[in-house]
Amino acid sequence: MGLLYPGALVFFALIPALVLAYLAKERPSRVTVSSVMAFRALRGFRRERFGGWPRLDWMFFAEVLILSLVVLALAGPFIWQRSAPLAVVLDNSAAMQALTPSGKSRFDLAREKLDAALSVEDGGGEISVYVTSPQPRRVAPPFIIHCQSMRR
Amino acid sequence: MFGLPDEFTPGFLARLEKLRIRTRQRYAGLGRGMHLSPKRGSSLEFNDYRHYSPGDDFRYIDWGLYGRSDKLYIKLFQEEEDLLTYIFVDASASMGFPAGDRKFESAMLTALALAYVALASGDRVMLRVLGGKGAKVNPSFVNGRHRIVELARRLADLKPGGQFDFAASLATELHSIRRAGKVFIVSDFLMLFNSVTRGLGMFTAASMDLTAVQILGGRELNGQGLDGDVEVIDSESGERLRVSIGERERTQYRETMLRLTREIKSFCLKRGLHYSLYTTDHDFQQFFVRAVRDLGLAH
Image (cartoon, rainbow over all chains, first blue to last red; front, side, top):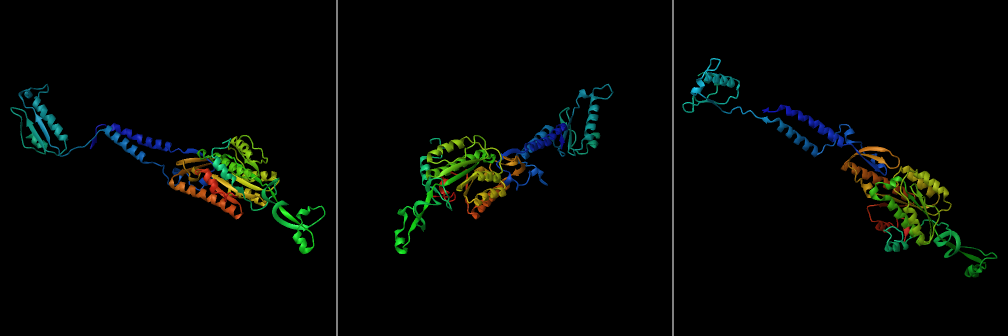
């Protein structure tokens, strides 16, 4: 699995901000009562108690979930499909025989590029190579060890 | 009606007129009335005999006794006088909270209803206010049922406010009272239990017949309107407490409030005082009619 825009993960920093916002919202309301006598028996603030935790209701968790999903969506996650078959179409028309300034034909250059690309590909899927001339056709049965096939 | 609060409907006034104040002992009054006085006088209630002495009204000579004993005796009768009724209304700041509970208004209604019962049965009423803001009620006796309007007007000018030491205030008030009689104290009694018992105990020590009427707000008693982390501020002392209130705490709070009222009731009953609790979420007229005995009244 990978991310298209890993930089978007910085938005996860909004979650602590959300917690802080909730803590700020937990600031006590002040109420004048006739007498505080009956309140003396009650314990102090929940978050001031030993092992206490601010009152985070279901809304908080819903907001954290929504925020996380939005940040993940921004990061553009994708999944590598390791066993996906790969089809390579190699142009072998006459135009590809033209020489490049380096002295190699365009076809040779294309093969080198293909070889380089397949050498970093570690998908493990089947690879089929097609050529375009005279009719589009597969040059060999699908193979897995691409380097050997390419050299063939 | 006629400057009285809306609760004083003609029907309610008629019911109040059928009531009278009941006392456990006899008190001397200031004029003729319907209560037996410790004085001897001219009522139909026989009290005692004494030897005839020259100058006595011989209409009171018991001739039957003269026939049996050959001696002249004068029949003595009990005097019937009015009852001196003192009504104390707590107007301290605590009576103004919670604002939605209208505790002070309920205390005024109770005081006026008690005053009307007394005035309608020919007794004298002195209304005294403990604490409060606004024009002070002149502490003097009034009699005649028409004076209820005057009392209502005086109370209407008052606003709850300030702080007072219950026991010390009552001691000062008691010092200024010269004649014993019936005392009603209308308060929320949300103060130290020791202060309540000292205050009420002083009146019993002074041979006063006392009724304590506790007024509590319905929301106040149930802790409604308080939720989550709350910093509660005492309306009188300004003391602050930080508490978290949920369902469990609300139940605990309610139990504490009920325990406080039970303690005061228990103290009153042990001392032979009348005690009645009115919570403002109930209908005032129904409360007053149902609590006649607890208020120290009789039909």
